[in-house]
Image 1 (cartoon, one colour):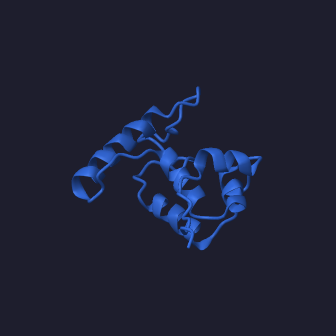
Image 2 (cartoon, rainbow, N blue to C red; image 1 turned 120 degrees about the vertical axis):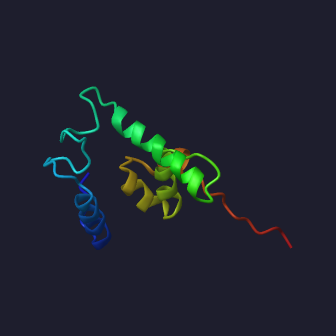
Length: 113
């Protein structure tokens, strides 16, 4: 999958780069030693730690009242656009997968008159 650059994406990447400390790395998000947060086995222990601290802070400093995961963020993406666009954004081969797993917004139905 190739994601095209938008002004918003460029801004987000530039913002992430500005947050870097004095460590050079080829990774956009990296440890203090310049290494990626994901291990060779595909597990992102470092990211998980950062995520847990972020969620705890969000719960204590905002009106957020329940925990959420990065999977919930994917579902939000899928729920805020049409099925075909959601399928493309999430990289699914079929719309059925997107509908079954990620489309969580309830369908609004008007009652019979």
